[in-house]
Length: 273
Image (cartoon, rainbow, N blue to C red; front, side, top):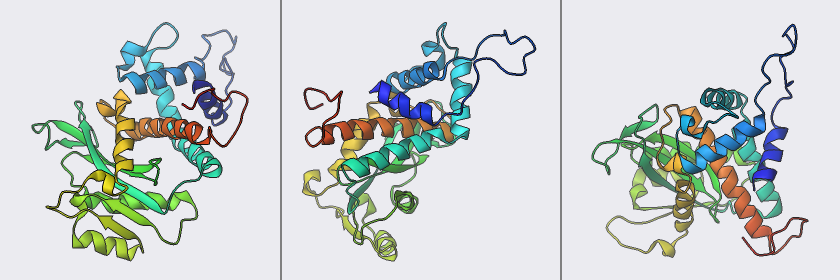
């Protein structure tokens, strides 16, 4: 998957010369290739190691950080994710009449802007993400907060992520767990003309009884990227960039799997991935 991901990512980057045009002799150290830095970011995302551990003679840790910040300022990661969503919607189709929202807590040993005391990890620093998926489990967006934040107040800003998805179905059902079982949540859904299917507090029900399991599966997919499961980044913009990159990979991987039975292309895998 690296090649198609890089081809699309490279199309979003500005054209830059190998050597700085202001240099009088044009013979100083050439600029590190964007492809090298992109590969390093993929390795960081997957393995969760430090920048210093992933750096080598081809690229230093400071170059990875500076290029990462440059791409964040240009909005490359968010556009990259949106292109993947648009492609999936065009070829397979997003199931936007059934969406699921739930929160997930992960470790954040370094603290930072989006960290807080974790109620499930002896008060250590943790990160909560309120994630939203479509009816199949394609990640549509997330809201970052401290681990000590309750899921319910994060519902409104999470639903706001629907605004960037274009035309929406007339009727949308939102699947929520018992943590959202309150009159305030139902009022919020009614104001937005959304139908809520909410688990009731004190009543055990298998997650398979509703469509909430899709968002639970997506949380597991995201936690497979160790950079997200144990986050050492301190700035929320950097965390969002890594999430956008992970969500793009999840979306493209699902696109290949879903379209394998309906489409043909030159490098189509012989077996369904």
